[in-house]
Image (cartoon, rainbow, N blue to C red; front, side, top):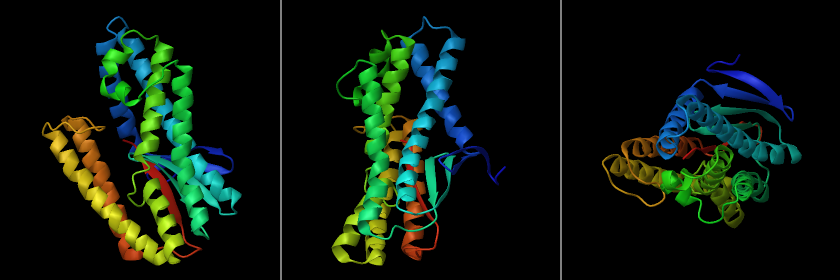
Length: 270
């Protein structure tokens, strides 16, 4: 048992923990999918619909775990210890115990998580036998899902949400994966990790502010490309923006941690 959560296993020598806040997003994802599935497939029984929704939500967080394992295994391959991975309300975080020793190492560790999500998403959509823009699955789920089998529905939704997860985490808002990619590029250009961290954190603050404002507009009915509209989506985007803002400002104050310090690498769930 860990304070604020529970250890659920160990993979590749890395402890896997679930924070209690994760139960909140698990419940929200399950409830949202149940609403979508019940409207698109009224022929399914309520018990089956809830069961499929819960299975989809759990598999989605399995995909988040795979994303984090990609970061962690690259770190371990480069000789950097990784203590644990924690799933929490905003996604997951790999607790990597040391900073990368080079810009190239930072880039590789950061980029592989989103790339893994994109590859997993593409494979799942191919297995579902669907080609095209995954955004249409999220934008018009009822139309897409109304004539699919339960298995194809599951594969299609998981494929689309993995692709969106990968794209979302490439947003250059430090300390999201995209922000760490940006920091690695700035590090290579300037030769200074401290300066690169400061600039990447400033970009993160700007992007976080934009997320908060956009989420507020969505909550009041504005339609935003890619993110959609509605109070739930808007509040969620604003909360992610707030989380990102807090993390970016903290890095602005602290700067890069020393080589022997502890570094988190993770992603947010859109």
